[in-house]
Image 1 (tube, rainbow, N blue to C red):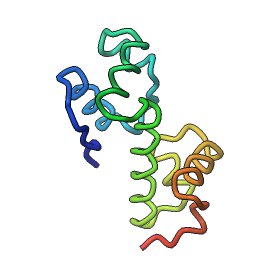
Image 2: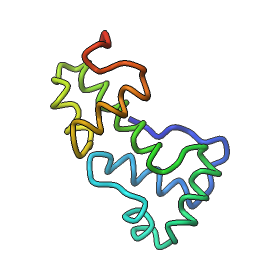
Image 3: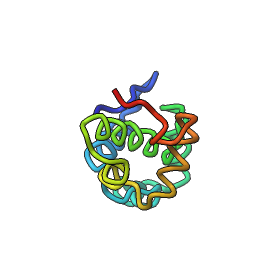
Image 4: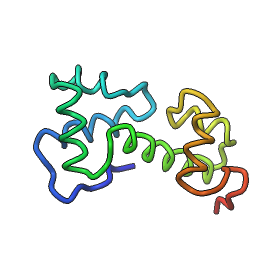
Length: 111
């Protein structure tokens, strides 16, 4: 899964996007990214939103949902896809899935 392209890609954002995509299933937070890239969390949040149109956590969640959907299409159960995509718990996955797709994973025809 590749990153969602931004209209203007800042040189500081590309390494962050690449890191997120390469470590999507690992625990990722704003603090982890800020520490990893030696920038303040507030500057990271501002820059990320300005360059991508997404919040940091919104981007991570959307990428994980796309990965989970891909895993389900590949035959994984909903629970397996949830945890393999990097979600910490099933209930947060269900809430995010319902908010993003408008239905529960079990209601969606995965083809």
